[in-house]
Image (tube, rainbow, N blue to C red; front, side, top):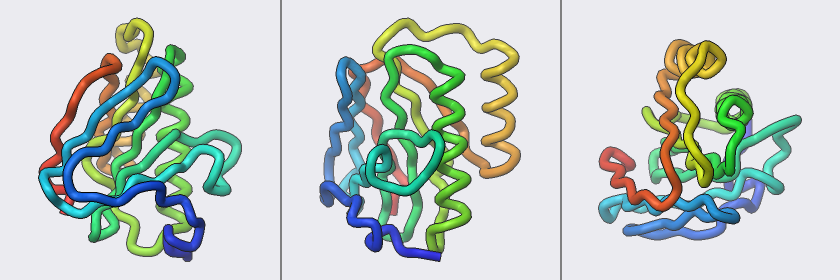
Length: 145
């Protein structure tokens, strides 16, 4: 097992607000003055074949995952699932936050059976609820301590 700092993927640390942006997809996360670190996942961590874009790590190793997407919601869920599985197997003291987010710059499709199966897998296996929302939202995350 490794520490996340072994991978040199922390791009920013702070106590208030983090902005996650890729192309037209963006979310702002307010962490209510709890110390957190913005972790670049895609292109940095050795997760294959697919992974999400970002994670937000609290001081007690609680991780919230963020995938920024134009469309292709099912693929975005697979990226979140793959990333959480890798963290679960490889990072010391890993605790998934109860929420992860898929931020869509395009239209948000209705849930179908493929999406429902992935949501159920995340809840059953990792106790994570993955929500999908439109780009440009601001979310406040209590309990990121």
